[in-house]
Image (cartoon, rainbow, N blue to C red):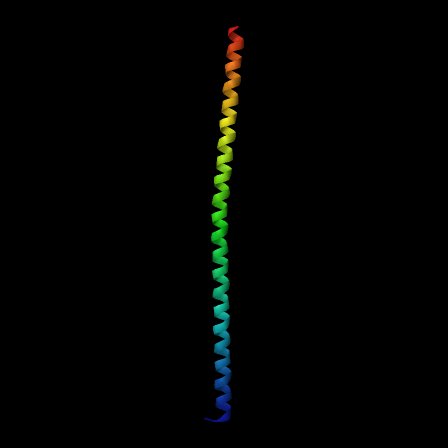
Amino acid sequence: MSENSKKVQDQMQNVLDQINNNTDQAFGWLTTVSEQMEKLVAMSFDEAGVINKSAQKISKDLLTSSCSNANEAVKVAKS
């Protein structure tokens, strides 16, 4: 093999190695992004559950207060 063809072969191997390294790095980044997105989605569901429970409590308290006020109004009206 001539010296020039050996240089070309070495350069091609270097290019292929660099492409391989870049591909590995890109897949690593995609994996990290995917994992972080999964965490964000899970956190969103957790937050939605907290918001839902809070809204249910507020609704219950509001209904209880409204019923109590209505009962008081009925008592006053009867007296």
